[in-house]
Image (cartoon, rainbow, N blue to C red):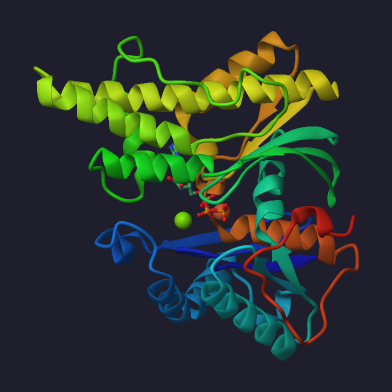
Length: 341
Ligand code: ATP
Ligand code: MG
Ligand code: FE
């Protein structure tokens, strides 16, 4: 079965084709970074309008790259939520109409389930069950995964998501949008010994997170240190490094706890922040110590993309799940309400 996947939940238009026998046949992402950069963040209405412009050309491009005609597609999967409602409506309306015109089944995919399943697109794949750490722009969740659609949330952020904390802290450091990668770049030049930031909520039991305090901690440190810094650039890098270490260390502490408490031997990381190099290094080391294994998608499949939507859609469409002609994107949508496959 060959599935066309369409992702338009935020500021990336992603389109891909996944083939059950041959794997990923084509995958194209158009990022709207240039459009939103001057505003320092995603402007929802501009995002929707640009998805309208880019979706059809990307579908044509992907079909051409895969050497396929419309008649070769057996199903269409689109992101139905969670995300920006206007942006979701573009992909949902487009995907559902395309499926109707091609007379194939359509399915609205849960964006976070798609992130969660993305590591299964790689060569070495984790077997179920496993623990998943979802770290993206809008979510930080620890999930016990028994199979596709069999999810139990073990913990989540009570305030900012990990990616959101990176983005907001990057703004405090005057770094360009999107903040996560720029902050990580600056942190590479920083001295990890100079400042030590708190590891929020690690001194009590449980698997929830809180990252908004770290942003405030960064602001206070900047206000205190920059005016009297001999080398302002080095001080900014040292502060970025301290912030990154605090986020990464907090995530590692909670993942270790989740692995120990659940007895699972496999951990997967997914979502944009799982592209972070330091996070991967530390998680590798932690899972070696625990006698288990860690899996993550290649960096291009950590952030938003059509491949993960095509793949998650394929998992469900091949099991016979599909949607009626009406479509209903959801800005909010708990992943635990999904049916098992
Ligand atoms: P959600 O998936 O929760 O709806 P989203 O789709 O906006 O949110 P993703 O596309 O998964 O999020 O990831 C984007 C986030 O990942 C941004 O917050 C970005 O700053 C962060 N990010 C990307 N690369 C890195 C990196 N190398 N280090 C830290 N953060 C990163
Ligand atoms: Mg994005
Ligand atoms: Fe995402």
